[in-house]
Length: 276
Image (cartoon, rainbow, N blue to C red):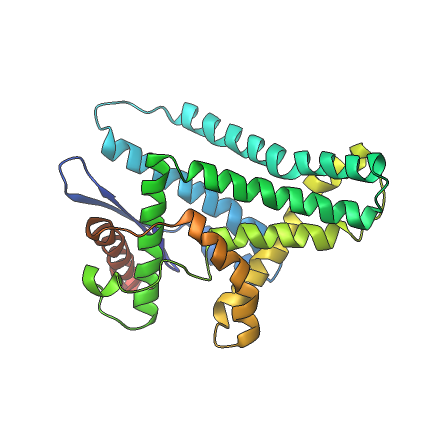
């Protein structure tokens, strides 16, 4: 999946080996004034990006399984359930463990929040490491690497063909993996300012402050991604880039072809007069 300023393109390798494309304009949501307001745009764009990703996965499933009717209701239920489980596993469970550190081990609220953040990071890293061993997910991660290589080749002005694109790194500073690592770091800093509180209040703050955490993370990733010419930005990007070793794999030539096809289709759509 490749998203531009006005268009989105999804390329899928069909069972017969052909590459099928779905290209469509982005909704008016991306043209609204809010996308230019720092700290407001983060949570809004993330929510919409999740929706775009879900729609792209649905299209991919339809291409791969054309004879099976995939109900959107069941897919949305699975998507919602995954979000609930994710919040519970990566936000609420570490908060509960942090509370135990504070009360059971008599840690200060500051150190219990640091411990909570370390637990959250360990869960994230462990989860990514485990699912990355699954053959299907490993293949998805290889396509993820192909996306990064394609974007890096374009940004470097290189030719967009598999041999050229394949020479670039599968790591990229503007990546969802980097975003997740950034969110974990922000939770440590932000929650440490809240001081001691009851378990119920601790869990509630982890939910209520999510939009603020996401907003801060989005602006951080946007700044570091746009200022890779600065040593500070490159240094701040390193933890997220290192973690991409878990969420990317080296793609083969056919995977690179799919990523390039999606990128070229998006660029062609962006060049249309009505997209200007």
